[in-house]
Length: 231
Image (cartoon, rainbow, N blue to C red; front, side):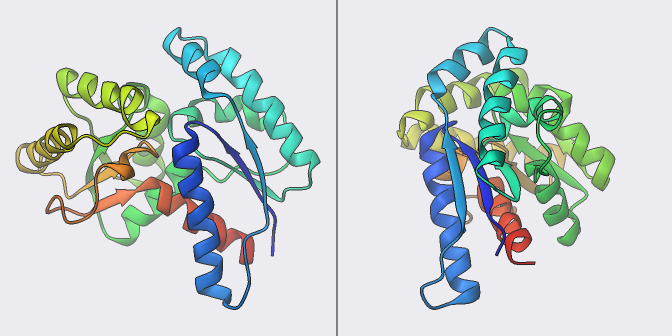
């Protein structure tokens, strides 16, 4: 079994979900007392969040690159970054390590292609929704059109992530508004599915709350990591 390097803490709530999913998947596949081989480095999200909202992405890249190097030194075979947004700085991190990074958008793109999805909605932080690093990668590598919410909806989704979900708060009113946004994208934009493109959103939205398929990037990424670990 390969050793998985986890770069987490952004937020720790979603990292805890990753850890649980990784070990559950190993148990399901290998049985017995098997558990995942993991090296985890968890950063202080307060530092990262301040840099994010000040557009100081190079500073976040330095922090995460240093942690990635420590994970590599601890003999991890590959790295997963346990957040969607910080994949924005993957190119900088890759320059500082020799082990591969299993990209969350690639794992998600493969799942969409498998299900023959050609047009999908994307919910996430405003960084993930509005910038090119995530949606363009899925479009260019997998040929899937990615539709994002309007400006007002993006602001609301972003606010809930940082003010509620990253603090472990799941608010029914926020859930209802998320569901309303997803249904609008389904009906008006003909989206065939929705990417939960922030690892915390899966705390709030589950399959069954909406009619179209939900692509939980946390679960998709974790399963892809296990497949790589035991391949």
